Image 1 (cartoon, rainbow, N blue to C red):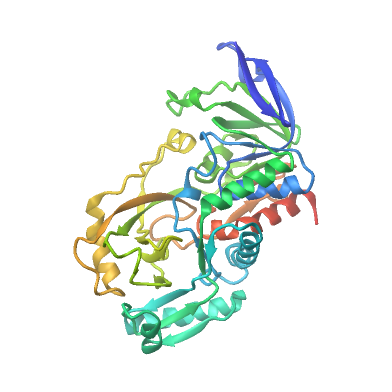
Image 2 (image 1 turned 120 degrees about the vertical axis):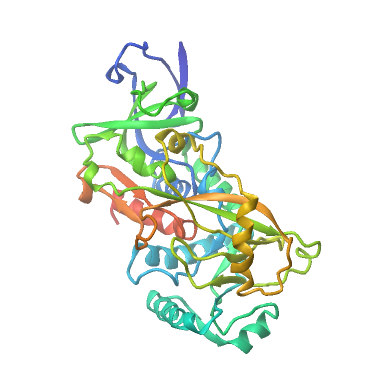
Amino acid sequence: MLKQVFVRGVKRRFHLPKPFETWRNAPKEKAECVVIGAGIVGLAVARELSLKGKEVLVLDSAPTFGTAASSRNSEVIHAGIYYPSNSLKARFCVRGRKLLYHYCSQRGIPHNQIGKLIVATGTSEIPKLNQLFNRGIQNGVENLRMLDASEAIKMEPELHCVKALLSPASGILDSHSLMLSLVGEAETNGATFSYNTAVIGGHLEGNQMVLHVCETKTLTNWDGNTPLQPDLLLMPIIVVNSSGLSAPTLAKRFHGLNTAIIPPAYYARGSYFILSNANSTRHPPFKHLIYPVPEEGGLGVHVTLDLDGQLKFGPDVEWIPHVPDTTNFLNKFDYSVSVDRVARFYPEIRKYYPNLKDGSLIPGYAGIRPKLHGPGQSACDFVIQGEDIHGVGGLVNLFGIESPGLTSSMAIAEYVAALLLGG
């Protein structure tokens, strides 16, 4: 039986191994750079490496790019306010925001720097708002300003608050157009994309990570425990594990890698509801992003506008207790939005939007966030592990790339390229 795979921009043919053979008997191919995962960060990394003159192969188990967290989020360009000073999230968000606005402006990618109001709806929240203001200043966020209630309500008449933090640098964008542009640029610079292609593990040969690759359809009936037979052993010089939701699970299947350094994975579903009023698109009640003070596990149920003026509220936080490997590798997460969850949305939204009418919210969509902390635990930073951490040359693992991953994507790509290539 013959199979085709894209390696180094060329369509290669090879024979599948017989079922009784071990993975060591699978055919081998060489590659220069392999990026695992075609989400927003993987695409940015692929573009950056291809611009540096590297031959890049991007593998993703989905039928196209950006099918998981990259297409199921708020599509917000964050300023960099929330994250501890000098953390990767703070550094990459501030740098990434500037890169992203420049990139979108230069290439005509739809975006709008509409600004954000983070609101305290009670006096007990004012200290938290002041902390966010000070943290934002420390992180280098420009033009932050504290507003009293009258100033904020003058900007947004439907708003209820006792104080607000104005972030003019925040905005929104069309994430699909961004990803499409990154794919196009990477391909123009010689990168190749192979979809429906799953990396199911790997092993060390010397100090090189050899990847175990198979067709996604091979995993359809996998029970998650039976050893998988790869169709191909891929031998890259550089490997970037940017597989998002499955990144920690995949790293644990890299035989020879010290699993003690791989952080535990947690998952949180976030649902969004859409404002259904007939005039909400033509005359939305808000013109800015409206955020409450952050809550455990997220930034709170906030107001986001898309570029067409449609208002949406979310996400909430629903921890997912157990996620099998098959769910990770095949993205079999439950993305349905339960109508019952709307009961939790109304009281949270009415804290800052008291005129929200009963029955005006309809289910929108849901996304899954790859977290490195669980319920009741402190929020974690991005974790980026290169050779200095795990000792494997040419391997970079990206863990916990949740919000502000979209905003940070181009800055993460810069960092990863520098880690691998120097500079």
